[in-house]
Structures are given as C-alpha cells and as structure tokens.
Length: 171
Image (tube, rainbow, N blue to C red; front, side, top):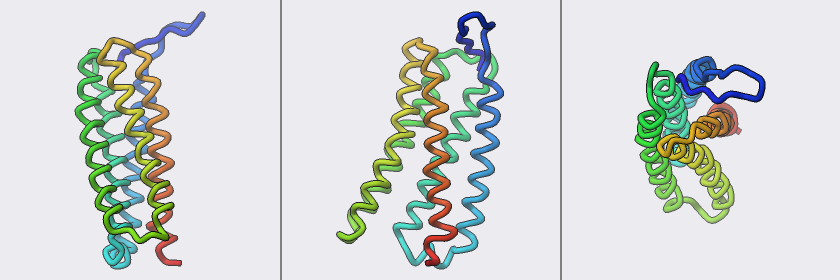
C-alpha cells in the first residue's frame, strides 16, 4: 500500500514490507495450526470447544492473510482499502462471536472463567481491524497503525490456541 505518513525529518515510508511479512507469518502459523490439528484430530473432535477454538484460530489467521494481502494492492485508495478491510473484519467479528455463543451454550460452570477470557481475547483484534478500517474509510491514514496491533494480538491469540491444540489437550 502506498500510504505514506511522513515522520519528522524523514521521507515518507510505505507499508509494503510490513504487510508482506504479515502475509508470510500468518500463512506459516496457519500451517502450524493445521499440523497441530492433524496430529491431535481424534482428541480435538472429541472436545467440541477445542474444535471450535481451532476453527476460530484458523479464521483469525486467514483474516490476517486476507487483510494484509488487500493492503498490498498497488495504487489502492485509502477509501477502497478501508471498505475491503471492513468487508473482511465485520464478518470475521460476527462469525467468531457466533461460534463463541455456541460455546457459551454448552460450557459447564467451572470452565466459564476460561471461556470468558477467551471471548475477551477474540474481541481485541477484531475491534482493532474494524477501527483501522473505519479510520481509512473516513480518510485518516493513521488507521494503518491499528493493523500492526491487530495482527500482533492475532498472532499471540492463535499461538496460544495452537499450544492448547498441540500440548494442553494431551495433559
């Protein structure tokens, strides 16, 4: 993306390298998640909440892949970038929360605190993606700075989920 925000005393910079790195990182993490699921498939299938968490992690990583890819399109305007980001981020948020509502319907009382923490973790990257998209739509290029935060939080959440899928379910 050719958005350039000049820093004091420095020439404008572009975001291409950052978003290209995020595409690669999200694809690599999605691959790791697939490996974790395939290694523990029978155990995951027997635990509906874990299967849902794996799906949510995968959807988050695919969203990062899609959003970073969209932001790499040459010559794209901030308005168009913001609209496309919102077209990805709003359904992402709704879909993740739809899965989470199903989890809440079946979780037993002792696990509610853990599920509450998980629910909160999912809200942060979604809110950041939507916030950045809205800022771009209204013409504020500083919305781009919301995406690194959203992507880092997404990676932290999905790495935690992958750890659960690879290790914790076997304890």
